[in-house]
Length: 352
Image (tube, rainbow, N blue to C red; front, side):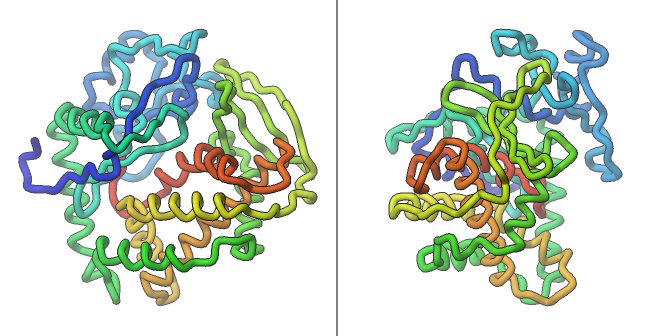
């Protein structure tokens, strides 16, 4: 356990289980971080001296972080085999070992899930992920987790002096959870700014920044805006790509939402807010803002941005699938498309 006194929150793992799906490998398309202090670091380099790529950053805390090298800098990890199984499973990196769990170091340590995969199941009697989370915390290198906790605690203890109108994370979360119960979830929340932000993401020249999605039949899809066409691209393990469909972006209309879709989106927003990461994003925005907007107003604006982004992504999927309405199933698919980005957005705190 930690050599310092700290709380560890496993509540977001309760009632959940996870099974790695055969023939998936989707998580291997995201370059996992590998720190030099990990036992896996030297083990990987012994297998392939070019297996890691140095992270280009000026942050001294991350100066010794590398990522798993990918095929053509966009395909899967070079160690993923043709059968989509890990070729270095026994010495895989820390982030590969803990997936799909994310660990947020803020005012406490909180474990939550990144729901970009289809291997989740919910059962109130199940504590599979909770047990996995406890095992992960026991196995983390002691020096690494103590350093991360000490840095995060120092960051959060300084917030009252840095932010006028500071609100503790649990109080901020409670206020925003109350807001979700009454917020308007409809196409009216999709503003011109949210459309522009979505267009910007789809137009990114960095392949890794484009929206990515795992289909039910385990295809890896990427969406990219080229000219006026929104392309659906199949990504192969080796980095090869093939366009499998396209729609005219200007014709991407907002479809009506079913009552079930509204409820599903509202429940997902509640989950987002319960992550300490959410408050961390709000604090970071507050520290970077030029205007003196209150934390609650920043949080509600951020939540509305998330909801608008989800609706735009749901309509994108619906356009390719030929849906005339956004229903509950389409919201579930949109969560798979979106959660990986939302779970790791830059935040005030440290994320593993």
